[in-house]
Amino acid sequence: MNTQLGTGAAAETREALSYVPLPSAGRPVSAPAVQPRFATRRWVLVGIATLLLATSLGIWWSFSGNAPVGYETAPVAIGDIARDINATGSVNPELTIIVGTYVSGVIQELRCDYNTEVKRGQTCAKIDPRPYQSIVDQAKASLAIARAQLEKDKASLTYAKANLERLATLVKTSAVSEDAYDNAKNVYDQALAQITFDDATIQQRQAVLDAAQVNLDYTNIISPVDGTVVSRAVTMGQTVAASFQTPTLFLIATDLTRMQVDANVSESDIGGIQTGNKATFTVDAYPKRLFEGTVTQVRQSPQTVQNVITYDVVISVNNPDLALKPGLTAATRIITDRRSDVLRVPNQALRYVPTGAALGDAKQTRVWVLRDGSPVPVRVTVGLDDDESTEIVQGALKAGDKVIIAEQRNSAKARSSVPPPRL
Image (cartoon, rainbow, N blue to C red):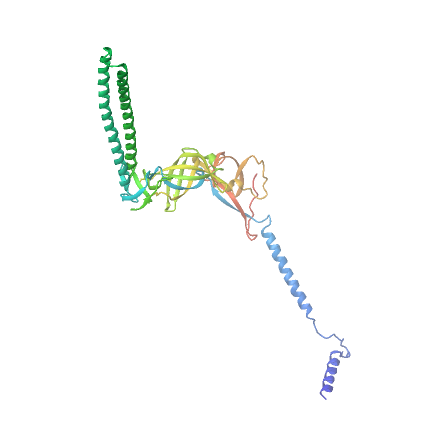
C-alpha cells in the first residue's frame, strides 16, 4: 500500500512540472521563472577577472615612466680620506728575555715571582750548589798538588844545575870522566823540562777549576736585564734537567712601557706596507679605546699555515699606563695612504646613473648633482678612496652640493611629474 502511494506522489510531481497552462483570451503564455545555478557562478568569475585587471593596470601605472622619481642625495664634504689594511695580531713586549739554566739540579731557593720588578744581576732562583761545590774543591786540590810539584821540581833543577857546573870544572882537569859530566848534563836538562811540564799542568788544573767554578756560579739563576717577570715556570724543590736543552725558568720583559704588535698581514696586502706607516688598533680588554702606533719593521720571513702565507709586521706603541698586557689580541688598521682636508663624495655617487640616461664614455668619471629638482652630470677627476668615500681632485663641485646616490619612483598617486635628467 505504501509503495502505491509513493508511486502516485511521484506521478503527480511529474505532471506538475510538465504542466503548461493553456493560453487564455488576450494573454500570452510565458515560461516558468526558473534560473540555473551556473549563471550565478559565471557572473562571480567575471567580477573577479575585472578586479584583477584593474589592479594590474594600477600597478603598471604606478611604475610607468610617467610616475615621478624621488632622489636620495648626500652632501659633498671636506674631510680626510685614508686607505688602510686590516690585520690581526698580538701584543708583546719589545724585548722578552728567556732565563734558563745551564746546569741541572734541585731548585733550592725561589726569589722571583710573577710581576716581580728585577734589576740586572739580581738572583731569581738558586739550584742546590753542593754537587758543584764538591767538584770545585777537587779542582782546587789538584791545582795545589800541581803547584807543589812545581816547587819540588824547581829544587831538583837547582841541584842539577849546581852539580853540572861543578863537574864541568872537574872534567877540564880530568878529575872526573866525560861520562860523569854527560850524565850530570842529562839530569839538568830533564829537570829543566820538568819545570815546563809542571807549568803546563798547573794551567790545565787551573782551567778545570775555572770550569767547575762556572758551573757552580750557574747554580745562581740571575736576571741579565732590568725588567719585569712575566712568567715563572718552576717551583720550590723542583728538579730541572739541562741535559739536551736549556729549560726555561723565567720570562722577563725588559720594558712594559714599550710594547709592539706583531700583525699577520696577508701576501696580497704586504706590498702596500712600508716602515713608518701609521697604525691604530683595538683590543677586547678596552673596546672603546683606540691605540696608535708606527710600523717599525716588515719582516721578510713568510709564515705558512694551511697554505695561507702571511708576513709579520711589527707595530711599536707606547704603553705608559701599562694598559696593554702581553698576549692581548689586537685588531689592527695600518694606514698606507692619507689625504687631509680634501673634497670627497660617497662612492655610491660615482656608481649612480639616472634611469634612461646615456652611459657616455666609460673612461670619464662623473657624478650627478641635483639642481632645480633635476639630475645634472658633472665630470670629475678622482683620487684616493677608502671604500666609503672618494677624493675629488678636479671638477665643478663644491662643498655642500647634493650628489645623487640613489633614486626611487613614487606611487602613481603622486601628483606632479619630474623633468628628465639634463645631459
